[in-house]
Length: 185
Length: 177
Image 1 (tube, rainbow over the protein chains, first blue to last red):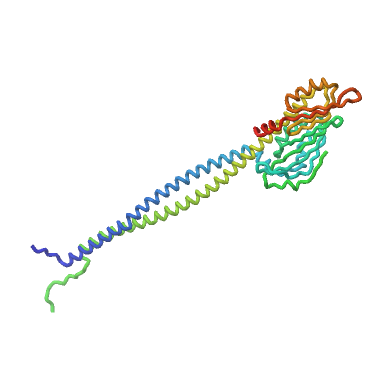
Image 2: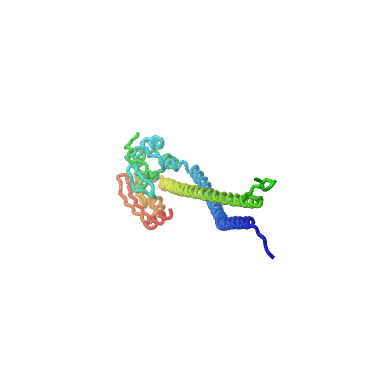
């Protein structure tokens, strides 16, 4: 039996085979590896997106926490930021004293990372109750002030002369040292 | 001179069979190429998006770190402020208790409140009044109590009372604070 294949048919067969081979090589050589790469990168992106979402959520939570804390402690934060002013202190607290004298403030050793300034105070009070009121008022005042030992009370005619040291606490950046000596009577 | 009465048909390599094959493979190759181009574009886009996400995540990390620092600082401020306010209140109560401690028959002329002690200067009508009405309560508070008396012309006695708590106990109290 003789198979009669024309030259033209052979050309067509060769063209078909070569094109089919090209398609196969392209598909297995480029397209499928690229598809795998696509899948991997999509998984990585999803992973990164998930991580980002978690961080975003944590960020929002932390932000809320910070805002809440700032809101609840606004007075304390402002008090630490405020530069101590002897004049203003006297104005606020002189109602508790018959006379009040504040020495020049001096930088003391830092405590717990905060700047500490010492102020010596001399005053006259008519009764110890004035001093109790002063201690109450100091806690509600514009600065974070701790009354320090020693505290001396001395009878002076009908008055009580008191002298004590106050520690003013502030953030480490302030410039309280420049405050000047002041005295009010 | 003509050898045939029909017109010769044109011979072309693009026979209908070839055209069919070329069309089929062209469509196949175009589809493959476009899929490949799509994958390349998506890969690039994924890489870009991932890079942006990582960059944003790092920014968030820094921001969270800063906020954590602020939160820690505010907490420290709050703790210190509360400690100082409490100390002031304790001091107020101590002074209040001190003045309540002194009976009416004894007059104080001077009082010094120290970190670990108390020094009182005053006048008492007699040693017994002082011992029963002031020294007893002072002894219940302080571990070391020393008193000196000086007689006055009117028969009353001036006294200097020095009272200390034990340093160890003071330190213990401080550490508890």
